[in-house]
Amino acid sequence: MAGSSLVTLPAETLLQICEALGLAHAPSLKALARANKYCYSVAKSLLFRTVTINVTGRSQLARDVQRCEMILERNAAFLQVRRSVVSGRGPSNRDKDTGSVDESADSGWDYHAASLHGGLNFDSTIPICDQVFRKPDDAHPAKACTKDETWKPLARLLHCLAAMTVLIYACPGQFPPCLLRIVQETPQSRLHIYTFRLRSLSEVDIESHELALATSPNLHSIRARYDESRGYEKS
Image 1 (cartoon, rainbow, N blue to C red):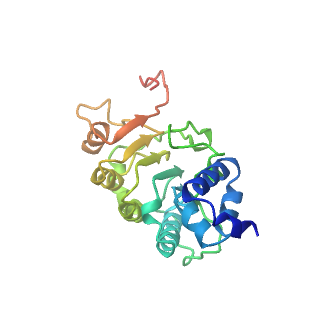
Image 2: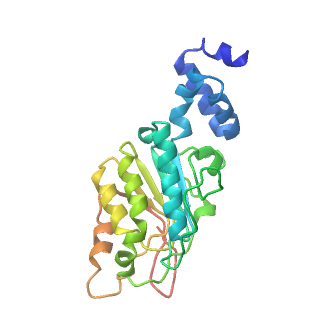
Image 3: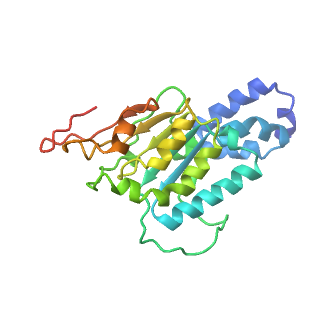
């Protein structure tokens, strides 16, 4: 009965209801989207607004990206994604593949912002989320380029998100070159790095990728750790 009565509401009114549900209780928004085709068509833009991937390994990243692509393609939702959040420890070449994609299995990604960030709204500001904070690693600057291949699946996914306006990166390793190239291909994308660090800052010449990252017009905000022994300052 409730689902049938919702079809009489104007789309603008139903969208406001969906936004309120998404911020207050994400499962309720998903339940409303299942009520009927009309509710789904309105809620769809919110259900897929944010894609968050928690990277814990190389093979896990590849599997989760593939699963994400399958779901977005099935729902024709690539253009609904506005924000991408990349967190976790990052991929490792030592990780071993454990099998094929299983859509029913638990994974390190999700596609609903409210369920992942406690109802925080990304529309107006980029939240300071303690759960995604990590200390930048001490890896040599060149390592970002040598590990670039492991990030290629994610770069492929981001390339398909033509309407993305925000990318938040919170992994300890340097922001990958292949992801920077994708961001620069979409001028409207704002890059927010929660683990910013220039590892070649003390060298005679700043490493080329770090220089490109620091001077990128897409770099919108950074968060850097304060370390008295290394000369960093809070941002």
